[in-house]
Image 1 (cartoon, one colour):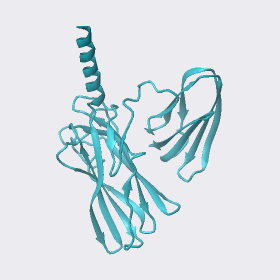
Image 2: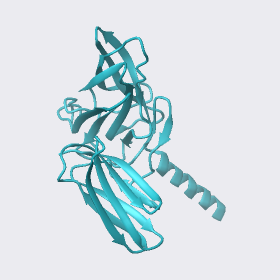
Image 3: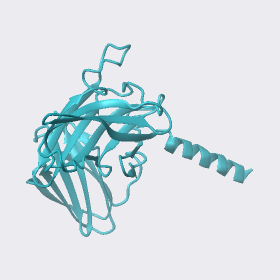
Image 4: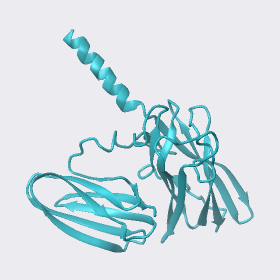
Length: 270
């Protein structure tokens, strides 16, 4: 009986950890018109149906082929009135890019403003158009190398009975990666969350011995805009980092504790 109870408990825990679903992301429907190249960003569920919470899609491209991207929201957007019986949208979108070398980088953010109001439902049978990216064509004869960055792209996914902050998993265009099981799960070492905020992010860290925690914030041009050091006793600690003084956009938050280092791209939305 004890073994059966243990087995049933294991099944229950497995079900709780896997219900959030897996997201597929791709670029599709590329169209070249003169010096303009446009593609559609699409998402699909791998297994169960769910609604998208907040998400950030990072991408890269060859600046020798493409430059100056722009984004037009489609679904999961401010104009997609699908919530509350087709009368309201609870999403906010932003788009940023940076071209400083051979590889351009950009990000498209989706912020859900109200819990459990994500729509439309994403299924495993149909791709959902998220946004259209358009680029200025520099040289159409060389590879564009337009790719979703599976390392940074992340979704909050919601099953039909779940809540806003249940994290799912992502399968990128070429790579498969997993996000943490839940933001409130115990995390040894250094952790930073959430990766989107209006003012503060939470830093969670554990020190085996008393020591210093260095906190640095960089803008997307690589400039350090904030630096601080905190002397901390041994043990587990949490710390709020206030970003409210900075404007809307992406920042990199870096934590250094001796030989251990953690970085996170943070979207700040005002």
